[in-house]
Structures are given as structure tokens and as C-alpha cells.
Length: 290
Image (cartoon, rainbow, N blue to C red; front, side):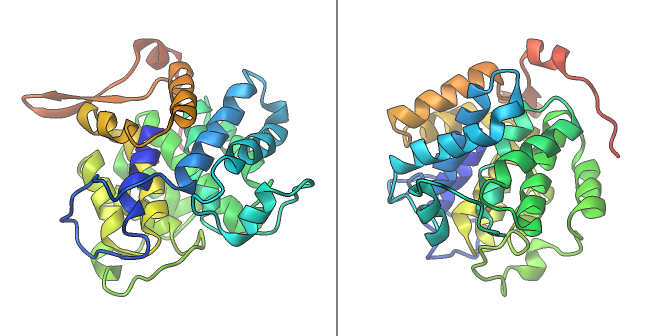
């Protein structure tokens, strides 16, 4: 989950002032967390409240997003979602916005099978973003996160996305000069995925995502959740990012990671390797790609 948050924080200062380069200070005093982090952690809170029974996940998702979201009214919500948060009778509003994908990575950590991650994704998405493109964008992101966490290669994940969600027939270099702000899932999720597919490390994935411009915090947030699951996050970068969160959000993150241990990155002479909780690793069941 910290990968999603790091992407959001790093991209926050470039959302309205895009940078078409990978050369920039990753985190500085101009950065902040936005609605991407708040809603990602709200979904984590909903997953935690369900325990081992996700039959009421939709209800929990609504409750968590409204309760936590109302505490941060100025963190950057879209107009329709802001209204939904404060609505006494919240209903889905047929959105295909990328807010569906930026908040979904927790499902990739909580799921124990490919089918489960798809179901969890659908349930927490359709309470707001019930347009087919919104549901697809969220599912593609959650599935990529799950496949990365369970040991699939970059090529395997890319192939699965290409066959089941979006044609990955472009490169970042081919779109960087002309890519513009786009809040749709279909106009930002494939780009966020490609930023991961072209990466060589967690930090490189975040830099890739921000370098194309557009909705920088959300694109980097989507990329960051998947990149964490694949590479892990350097301890120093994690430590720095945590200083941006307040006590409420930090408490949710810690509780979620205690239940669903993150993948940490450990530096060795040969480079970076992924180190996963032994208990978590032993509990995973290999799921064949469909």
C-alpha cells in the first residue's frame, strides 16, 4: 500500500504543472497526499472491517469512504465524488473516472486468488464507478497488483493485461510529447500500467509515470501500487513518505500492513531483491494465468 501512497505524494506537485522528464526530486516540501491516498486507505479500512468475510464489503466500502473522506474535504476529489461523499443516500453515478483505479490496490493484497481479486475489485468499485470502463480500469489495476505480488514476471503481467483489458501497443516515449490530462480510466490506466512495464525498479516506475504528464498523482499512484507488489519499496523511501501522513491515515496503513504484510526491498551487492514475509509466502497458492 505504501507504493500507492508514494506515487500519489510524488505526483501531487506535478498534477497541474506537468514535467515531461524523469529528472526531478522525488519527494520534497511541496508534495502532499491527495484523495488518491485517502481513498486507497479508506478501501483498506473497509477490507479490514470485513475480517475474513467479504459478503458486506460493498456496504463497508461506502461507509469507510464517506467517513474517512469527510475528514479531508479539500484533498482533491472530483465534483461528482465530492457530492457522493457527503450524500445521505449515496448511489453509483455511472463514472468511468480513474478514481476507480487509484484506490483499488488494497484488493490486490487482500485477495488469495485471481477470481477473488476480480470480485473484490468489482464490489468496491461499483458503489460509485459502475460504468463498464470504470469497473475495467479498477479490475485491470487490482489484477496487475495481485499478479505482481504472487510472483509473475513483467512479461506475464503485460501479456495478461494485453489479452484481457487494454492493448499495450505503445511506449512511453511514443506518447510523452502529446499526452495530456485525462481523468478517464481508459485514458490513464493503460499509461500507468505501461509506466510499470517499462520500469527497472520501484523508483524508476514512479518516475516513468510522472514523466508523461497528465493526471500525475493518480497515474503515479496506480503505478506505485503495482510496482511495490513487484519490486518492494526501499526502506529509506518508505520512511520519508510516512512523514507526509497524519495519524489517522498512518494508523490505517499500519493496521493493513500488519494483516497483509508488504514486500520490502533489501539491498545486496548484486542489487535489489524482494523479501517477503515467510508466513505470507507460505500461505500463497499459485494461481495459473487464464
